[in-house]
Amino acid sequence: MIVVLILTVLAAILIPSYANASGAAAVSAVVTDLRSFERATRFFALEVNGNLPPFNEELRIGLKPYLEPGATASKPAIGGDYGFHVWATQNVAGIGVWAVEHPELLVDVDSHLDDGSLTSGAVHGVTTTGLLFIVYGDASKFNWP
Image 1 (spheres, rainbow, N blue to C red):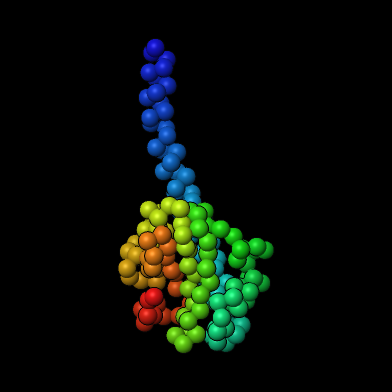
Image 2 (cartoon, rainbow, N blue to C red):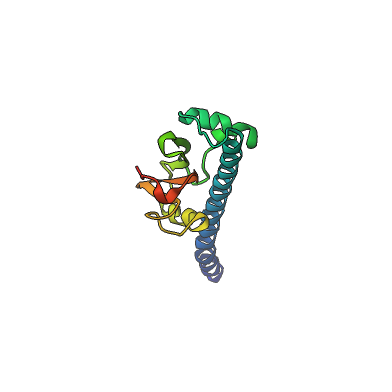
């Protein structure tokens, strides 16, 4: 009975720690992906003299040479999908993280990339389960969707 009690106490201590560690690892993976997409977008924009393509799919295809193979088709570690977006009239590009399975981690992603607020800066929450990260252009003058 004492052994069962000790095992129960250890489980109660370790399970929350494991959950926190796995959440932090998922956030770190998404932040790394988004920073890679940001760098790739900046390189691509230099190549095209800052004239972003008018279509989202052209941006995704244009980033491929600057990323690991398959990166633009990868899934975020917090679930959902990445989306590549261009607002040519504003000369702004953004990467979306849509339909995530753990929306409670979106603020943590924002904290690593920006100001920790999903309502200001270059990272905005634009759905209850997604965010948009402006990776090229002036986020302060961007008309948020």
